[in-house]
Length: 340
Image 1 (spheres, helix red, strand yellow):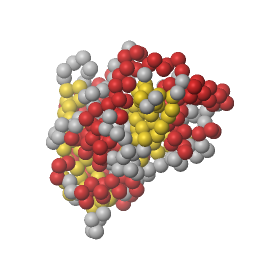
Image 2 (tube, rainbow, N blue to C red):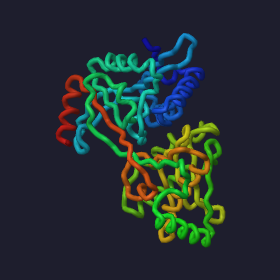
Image 3 (tube, helix red, strand yellow):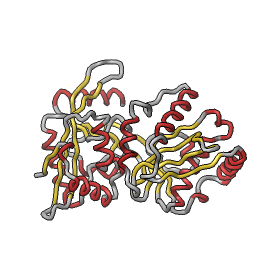
């Protein structure tokens, strides 16, 4: 049986072992690390009731981790009716993609059996799981949604990406921006100044307002991301590609470096620079920076916007699963049947 802890009870040793486990699991993204999960619990999760199950070897090595909390899911956007379920801690609000339970191969059957038993009479809601998590799911799990997450392989370098015309366009955008005094700079994990993230959030809001679109990457979510930045080490975590003119940040891309991948989370830039294609240039410079740092993958995360495929992105689907129990499970099953 696993050891169970509340998030606030974890020791530095357990947290370090959890992080090492995620680093060793090729199917686990940065969203499975204690960095994301615990910061989410402290901010968006409002330190609510949660439990984290640990499986450890005789020498104390962490071999599997399953963080869970209870939440309520709304059955319809315009109706107040909700149902209670168990879900992975750190999922839901905040757009955590590629979910999984970090687990060494020898513990996968135990973790799957524990999830089945832990659910008991409560429905399990497992959103946006990485494809490699499928064999951790209990019997009776039903896939209810899929979300494409385009990604770019960087093995051949930045200059091999896209069509000849696209590469020519990027060079032209770069020349015009350089003539206007715009420079680009990579800000590695653990080196961002405190005022950088609020500037990106403000610029993101300006861009979304110019498009007439809403966003959830706003001041309400800022505490989560400020905590992530403040706790970041120098080898992994939040990183930025910023555009500046005369020392002023006019745009920036924010994401997470983990292992051999960079995951692009959000972008913001001053809409006045739209005629010079600043947004496209920022993304291109971020892809270039990732390739120059010998990362293997630039992950665009969820969404199939056409510009992603101009960089030769290919889809990898995250899937959402339901393990229905009782009335809540029946209602959620009906909801997704009607949606389908």
